[in-house]
Length: 479
Ligand code: 5AD
Ligand code: SF4
Image (cartoon, rainbow, N blue to C red):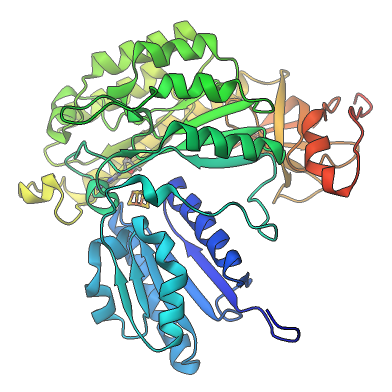
């Protein structure tokens, strides 16, 4: 860039799951390599990209109202470049270009690498559509982190290990938007994590739509070089990696080998988000989930034998077509039996071209579904409170993320069980560093505590390396 020439500014708006959030990080990094820099909002940007989610109808509707606002902005500033990516883009494709004349380009999740080219084309007045499925693993080849691109939170990183889904659950749009299951070569994952660790990352979250299907043998295809469990074992051996998480697993791929990792790999965090969706065998069968209630409970028992105290969270759908009051009672009883620490419950939302919609199944009456959702949420609130209360007075190790949004000098981070811990400390603990915290009170959503001694070891040194050597051990007074 010539002197005096300003960087173009981009603004990314992201909806949806962690896969989408991570895709947005990948796009932001690509744009840094293209010489663009972030803008705080759409008004201050030359390029606005909306990254979309279509898992439920509500998210899609929010997107349409947002696109209306952005297209109005573009009418005032015709040089604004406007793109739409992600799952709705994949699903609606040229329909979006037709409906919103202000949109310059539309691209699917597998076409992130085309972003710079689409922006250049838009600068020359051309509209583009890139929603082709990429069958090869070339889509995982993305540039290294640009030096000006700050991490989401120092100390933590997402790492894609697989993409897509081949299971076609009856309610789910994902196989259509994210395409077929494909695993990333193990060496490239190990290389990325080694690199992240050298920059001070201590916690990695492995991502994939059915993440534990990673490397699984399938008819007609060569199995991956390593299984998901073996991948975890290898990652755990990398120097500097202290915490490993993954999301979202499917119960079908909770193998004995993976269960054993909970006993053998101390870096694997004592938390698992294992979506169950329903506690009724009839509904599970109609959803095409491929496991029974008994099998799910057996997995939970196996995991808890391997790792006593494991915190479990889940996703649930109420009002799936044909769900009777008895089916719903079975979901409540399963939630009670497992005692999930938290759950995300959703009302069934019919999605285009999913098996349930193609079969012409009609959803449960909306008011009934709403009442079920509220009962489920009340039960979960009780269970969460109970789980939180059980931690009063205990010590935990928090990976610090920064200042808490509650203010008051509080800081925030996550404990190994992935609960939010807000805490006070005699002096601020840098983000990306571990703090030892005693839990002094709890709320329905988080744990509250006080930092005791701060164990700021090796990772503080790595985080601060560019600014000179850091103290190896930083002790705070015990409070
Ligand atoms: N309706 C309601 N909830 C859904 N989910 C996925 N598809 C639908 C749908 N059509 C929920 C599931 C999944 C989570 C990410 O979103 O619970 O685990
Ligand atoms: Fe939404 Fe599913 Fe796409 Fe994630 S994969 S963005 S949850 S539709």
